[in-house]
Length: 412
Image 1 (cartoon, helix red, strand yellow):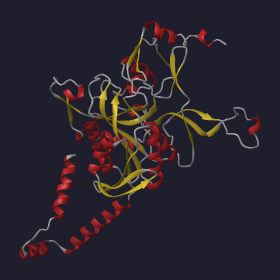
Image 2 (image 1 turned 120 degrees about the vertical axis):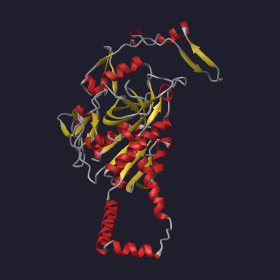
Image 3 (image 1 turned 90 degrees about the horizontal axis):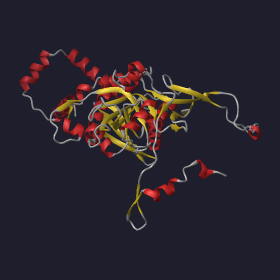
Image 4 (image 1 turned 135 degrees about the vertical axis):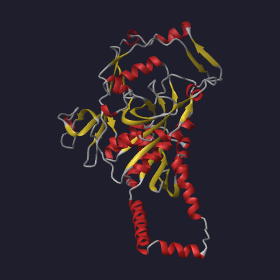
């Protein structure tokens, strides 16, 4: 918890105590402070309380328990609502209304939780608080990366010519509420068939400008910029924790940076593969829920931001601290709740607004057209048979199985 949070709780405890003041002191106070001043002060306090109560809440989504716990610890919970199997906790952070829900750890469940939160609670903004792995050598365990942009790193087509390329993107069917300003649009859909032309529709023809394909989602700049101002509130990490090497000494000051967050349901560690993927989508952090979250908020026109504490780094495979990362993300969320205005400016983030050391800022692009790669044959397979015995496939036995993966094997 931030120093400011501790102070507020101390003041709140003090306000609840029964304090006995001598009558003479009360009389002195009554004489010293004009009644008009007391009336104005009371009216202002009442108006401020009404203003806070009238604010639309800020929605907060977390993937699982360890990410949700520090958010609930920051909240003064007043109740909850159960909707379609998800529990939405209602309350306040720093006196501001919030709603929090744990979505689950995959893209699809995050999309559902976002939809239910947006439709049922009408938030003025939605934040996704949690953890991610570093995809930038200058991002360390304990740092926080916020989403200037979001990309889908599972949206890759590996071509026979030795290169990878993104698919056309995710289709958003635009309505008057939808917000795709600042997004990278790769194309438009084709009008769908109707009963009158279905028989001869085939693949259809023409262009439907209300169906756009998005390769990268841009978050509102106001949310991104405000979050980066919370650096002084997140603290530091020991170098032993950041590297996973217990013998290391010292500590590093953590930071909040605006970068690109990639969603992928594949956990990638070899640096050569990270390089190939990052040259197509130059991300700074990677996790499992970003795209469903960004997609749904863009579809419904709700301002959004991912706040990702860094729990691990591919440059230090033995480093992992999900608890620290979750707490640091929650501190940034608290800062945002405290400082966001009643109305969020939806002006989108641009490439030039990202952290100067963000990969995309250094490379000069957010999505590449092509990135070339090389993949060698499988050299070993390890599995357990039906008896539970460990089996290792190598040599001639593996080569026999590999014979399927030749063009002659598929000859008709």
